[in-house]
Length: 405
Image (cartoon, rainbow, N blue to C red; front, side, top):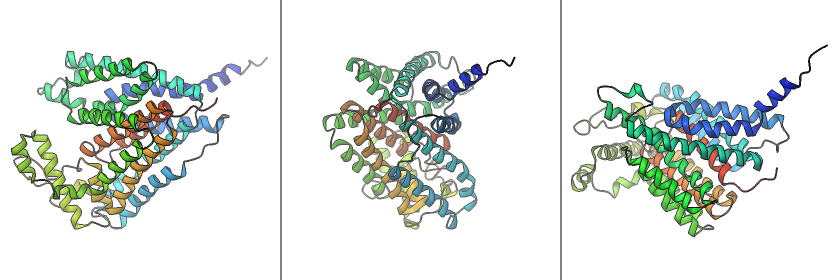
């Protein structure tokens, strides 16, 4: 007699269960961010494929892309593709293109998939995500006190500097993900939410990460502003951020020279270097203001390897500012697409977030992401693009309105 096949079917159903997948992703992703953030470039496409398979093989609502945000993102992607024809270094453009295409398409699939998940799955996600974030806070304390207990490979001749730099990426992203945590806890008790922020800031004080502190500060301001003005606050924040993106190359026209700011304000050397980079980037933008130099050409911009001061290279790999990089490489249209993405994101948060706290938390996540994007990483780094899509999906699941099961 043939053995029944129910166990195999049950196991397959468990693996392809959306609740199982999002629960695992919710718990594992923060830990992955803390220890191996570059692995997000793998996490996103794998998660997108699994969730897409679940959506197509289950009774969940029909899988449909949201036309406006998807259209804007795909519009920027089309501009990236077209820039091959006028790229200053087409080899650099073609080299980065496949990874960017995979990350963006995976991100759109992931965002679309999570939007259709039922409320039970969203609750499971929130619980697993909260548990993981609390665990990561404990891990941050352990690592900061021990100087890298679980990171033995960081102990080199220059252990202190390497150890601090090891957590630049993780802490920057954690400073964004803390806002969905605040939403989850504030729904239960405001004291818990305040305690979580306080605990994270206490952990952050052991590290040197200006961008993470700035993200928390701006996130807090945005959260309070949108909480007080839930109807108009998201629009105001969106317009301010979008305007900043479009106007970014003109800012240096109204500021004193970087050297003057460095000497008068006693700025850190790293901040001074950022100012020099942004000043140099603005000069290159002025040379090709309409179409830009081509996707991913920041890496070999003319004059980019010259020292502008003692050891400050004019443009090391990228401008450390997404707005300037969009404008430098993709011209005016690149900046407009970037501004549109931010503006539509805040509008989606206003429209679909479940109440005042969720709306404030969602827009705070956008504001914190904006800060990191404008002072830290390259706009096209695959792990960073993947991280932003994962952050967006996590925020949607935590902050969205209730969807019937």
